[in-house]
Each structure stands twice: as C-alpha cells, then as structure tokens.
Image 1: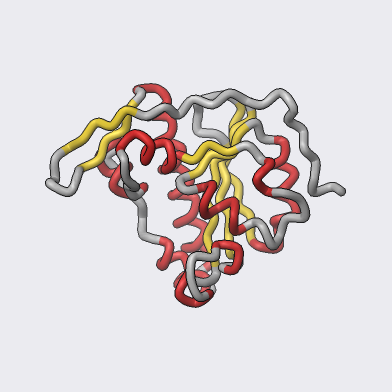
Image 2: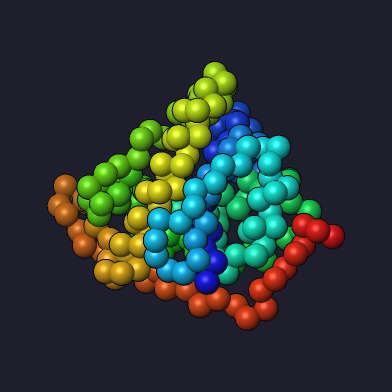
Length: 194
C-alpha cells in the first residue's frame, strides 16, 4: 500500500484572505513522506509551488494521503492548482479521527507532546514568516518536521489504538483512535495527465 503523509505550508494567513478560505492562501511548500506499507520512516520529499505538477501524479497513485487536518485544509489548498476533483484522492485525516473519539479538536503539538514526547518546531505563522523572509531552508525544515511528527503520531495510534494528550484540567488522557484504512479497488486516477 502506497502511503503519502503530507503537510502544506501557505503564503498567506486567513486574515489576509478574508476568512477560512484555504484555496486562497497560495502554497509555498509541501512536505511529503512516501512509503510502501504501514510502517517505516519512508522517504522525505520537498515540493515548492513550482513543483506541484510533479506532486499530483504521486498523490493520484497513492492508496491513501494522510495528514493532520488534511481534508479541511491541506487538500483544499490544492484546488486552484489541480485540474481535476481533489476530493477523489483518498485521504485519512488524523485530526478528524481524533476529534471523532475525543469529541473536540486537539492540536498536533498537544498530541505529539504527550504521545511521542516531542512537539512541533513552531506553528504555521512561523512558516509564513519564513516564506516572506525568503528563509527557504527554515521553511523546508519546519514543514518536514511536521510531516515526521504526523507520521509518528499516525504510526503510534495505528499500532497502539490510542493517542495521548492533556485535557483542559491538565490531566493526561489516553484517547482511543481508529487509524485503519481500506484502500479502494478503483485506484489509479491519473487525472492530472488529462
């Protein structure tokens, strides 16, 4: 099974585009982990905005694209760049699966801190700052770290059946999760080649 774990960084904030419109933010960078099977470190890859035409055939080939808030954010940022229906690409949204179990949203950093003992190296606003300041190395490093953290949280939850986080009373919660995924048999979209 071909898994793609990804994270998208954007050029603008929601305030700059007048609200929650991921498709208006503009993509600066996409970090990707490509792996066959359900485990392993995989191969990290970097895609700048100009490289997106090289990324789309890979996404179309994937059995599943995994991300943290991938459905409502990352995949939506691709809409202006992608010539077909981005919702046809199969996804597994780690945030959605956690929210279904916990009953509310939890940040990737909060989950990673308690589940893995490591956190994110910053936040999305840092990535926009790196982009605006042309700090390409910092932008790439930040995004690929997010990809690695997402991969490791997913792997932990898939293997153990739970993740951990601290609730608003600062109590450690072990939250059951179902990160299982069954690939669709009709894969092989090749829509970006049309």
